[in-house]
Length: 408
Image (cartoon, rainbow, N blue to C red):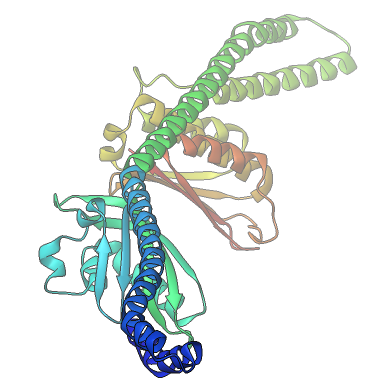
């Protein structure tokens, strides 16, 4: 500005002075002597205002820069995650102190930020994260968010959520990454603990319901056996001692005795099926064999039962009762619907699991078309107590194989 005004002053000042002085030589000499001082004063004033304006702009810019720095520092201090600003073209990265916990400076000195970050991701997550990142980069996505386990400077893995903003150039090529990595390990641990507590509560509730059902069954079994069965026995005794002369009455009485005997057998079978076995005085194998013997008295079905002694010794009384009820429930299903003549039951231990297989030669069914009945639902509800599984293999005309397993 000073040089420009100086050139114009040299070119135009003489013309202006001569125009003012006219033919007055004395005035011309006086003006010529003072025009230099006038130029210095005018140019000084001009430079003052220009520099003052520039100074105000610089001062305003410095204040804005300081404010921005304070905001960035406040954001870094209040943000619980690690923040990054990664320039891919220049391979330069800026990060806060929390981010350096996951990307140490000694590793960044030898490798790029992305290489260091991917190298510290847990082996179970590394391939997935790499594939997701490549997909986001090759698309037109503006953000990328994922969750994985990341190795910290203390050699422990932390569960983190990574959110990145993908900044692209005019050709839509990725040139910058800005984002954060937030540690959510404590949150995930609390969620897992809450889930385990809910699961335990659900198991306790289901166990309480089943125990209440078993107690009620036991009460009904005792009532049937001690009261109704005894009354029918006495009635049968009276009918047996009655002396009747008429042939028709004798036939009716004999038929009544026959029905009463059948009722007694049905009550015994019902009582034994309702009343839970006591595993303090009997084994699971003995209880199942007795159950099959009771069924065999009224149904023409052949049974075979094999048991691994290791499995029974590893089960608690509650697990034995569950195994007994599962077998009992499936035997009832077979008697009602399968029209089977042979049932093969097996119980064994495998990889800390108790496995039960029940196979029949009945008419079978189509597993894709049939809906799960009450019997199968009862089995499933019992298995849920011990994280058990149930598998049904059947086809029309080929019988059925039910396989259940649960944790010991």
